[in-house]
Image 1 (cartoon, rainbow, N blue to C red):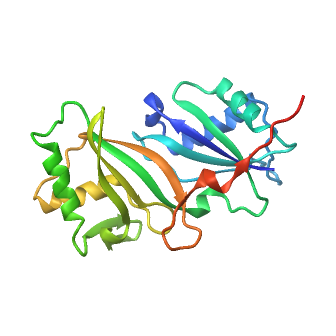
Image 2: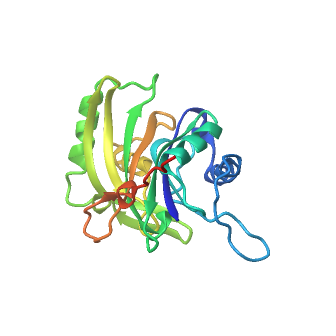
Length: 242
């Protein structure tokens, strides 16, 4: 039985890197006595797949983990058992059953939503005007930037990789909401979206000025940017009847 787990990462746990998150969940699954399947061979390991590594220092309300379990699990009880062993900074939000033929989470990630806000102490005189300028900047036909890769640098047109960009205004104050390309093909970070605009102003982005929070992760199954959240690709797990 394939299960997709959605969880949030917040507080001090945002400073834990991806490899440590993997090790943490391996131990949490054992503590919760989840019947996860193991690989075969001389060094068996738990069969699990995380959707997209989250950068250090970023909180998230939309992280995903796929696991194989046997025997079948009750979704609500699985969620409760995992939350019972979670440390502060991790919370299981939902568990869904996946079809046996479903591709693992990591292989289908195409986009992610982020919210960005200014950290206290880095306020601008007129943040609305600055953010409106950023929207106008991305209204251009092309936004060319250089991105460092393992093989050197390559030029990207960010305009093709920023799918949505809008102002965010609520009780927490002004901010930005963006949907950007994420995954194995073209993976960009929110900071790169900001850097391009700062550079156009002849400035450098203040290193600690912006706080980012990932809100959701999406697949693009048809390849035409009609994005579907990874959780919507699963189905509710029917509860056991006592």
